[in-house]
Image (cartoon, rainbow, N blue to C red; front, top):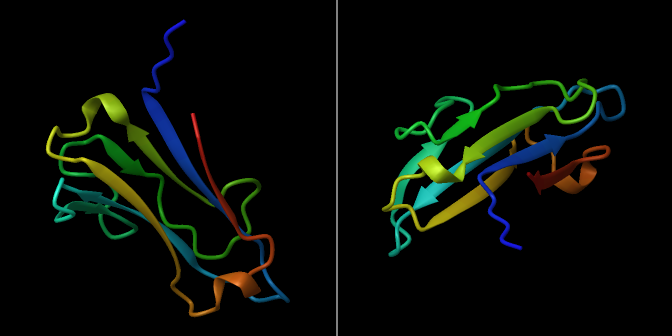
Length: 109
């Protein structure tokens, strides 16, 4: 049986921590075979130039049910020059990630 992944989703979740709204951000960086950046998808640029990757929007508080931020990747539309897609999670509000309540990320189809 042949199995092919076509669409992936990166989910990022976290919760309000000690009454403080925390702003985590998920980003995707697209690299060529030499690890040179081709494109970047983040809260300030919600769609890749080739349209294959779409950021679901910036959540600034961590008060959503389930995933607070999502990035959708359509593998069949990724430009042929892209050989690597890296995902970056950062704390825009400055907290260390291990101090954020129930912070998690996962990649699923």
